[in-house]
Length: 209
Image 1 (cartoon, rainbow, N blue to C red):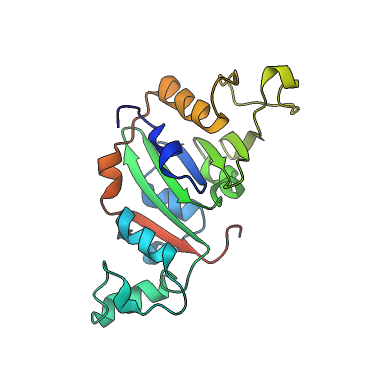
Image 2 (cartoon, rainbow, N blue to C red):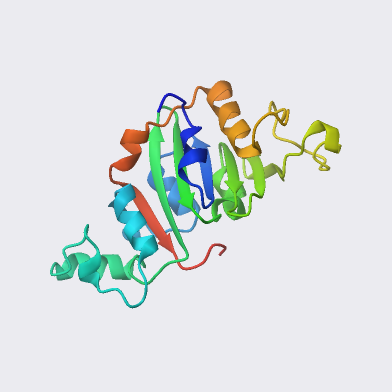
């Protein structure tokens, strides 16, 4: 993928949340979102997709990534909530100077934006399956802005604070525009290929907690 982040907007057609935190490690990012350290496991993008498509009627043996006869592994993943149809699964990775997180079809990070930015700064962008968009940023434990970008001819955002440096022109969808802004403003690049590999991952029973 040639574009540094914008492949995310085309890959997750059922909605997603992408979050950046400066100067912390991926596991710390997940902990700030409410994960317990012992329940963070490294899972591939394909493994997470299998877990998210799993239904109550499916047997563990249907999960291609999992050796269901490995009782110790099954126990660890069960205790961590991965095998009980969690509402949210978050994968986190590292790029120079930043940690990032991706959620498919969920939006847990915005509710933890203040915690994510403690002692640093954080950005997040959300798009729902219905085409709703929100972007936000926080610094040193304080949310500076979280809002839905609006095209200028519609009267701006209607909020008091906006993400500093992000000027939405309406020429593309808001999430793509925000990802482009992060690419340009901070030189952020996440490799699509690296993203397929196992990354620190946490499961959450609820989107907000």
